[in-house]
Length: 354
Image 1: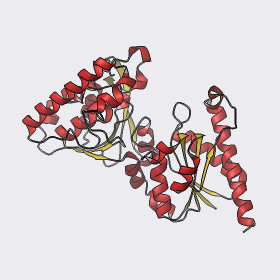
Image 2 (image 1 turned 30 degrees about the vertical axis):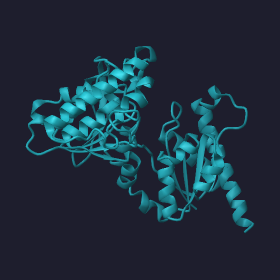
Image 3 (image 1 turned 135 degrees about the vertical axis):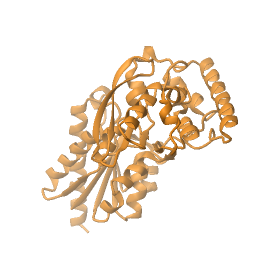
Image 4 (image 1 turned 120 degrees about the vertical axis):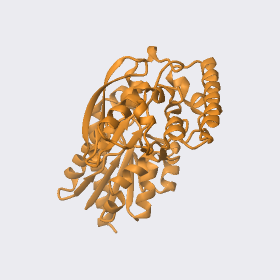
């Protein structure tokens, strides 16, 4: 029995690696000779550095940069054997680095991301994979641009930058960076209006300066407009973070010998089908005609999930468990293992009764 694990992180609970280790233990308990292949997952958001570095066998490097409030912070990036730099924006300007009471979307800066680019450039990197999730900023990437060394801006050949993100929002407007994301970064309603206007002005000025306008491009609003700055000023290309990772790991090749794929996330509902990582895994599994099971901390809209193509959609948690208990890492690991055990036992019984 060949089982492929492609499980997203359970936010604020388990990393993708932790979730997959627990699932693998459950599979091995039930099917002793099962061949389990774990493929750590990321859509370009929080934790992408660890996942992409693992997938590409990259070396981690530590540097001193500034966080979104311009405080000194130790950050990491990774370098592959062909000197491609893997950068997670949240390592520098991440919202996880700032306490809720400190969040200040109107003044937070992406300056530290530019410092990470500088560090990798001086190391010899000219190709970059940049994950844009989890930022505390809404500065349209102006901080990042201001931090770039003049040597980079004067580079005769453009940098090769791929942005890993599944955010499709434009830079400004009702679906833009400020209106959709700034409040969760600490902005008031009045500040959201000002941030949106600032983004419009920056886009107008940038279009006049460069003769092109990418403010409405898909993903321009990612990471508070950081996606826009990378595309508009540095020629970066936006890609689905999940699709990029699957391509880099040869996921479709792995599926050729798979009997089952187990994917998952913290909370699965109809939103899962709108481009979230399990839906990307679903698409690839269906193309390969492989059975796919979805596990999650909570399951809503199960019938829609099944109708979309998931063969099983199961919550790992028993009824009436408290949220605090369910979110405890030890509990979550145990429940993932138990759920995978149960699903495999049920599948073996079903096969015997065919």
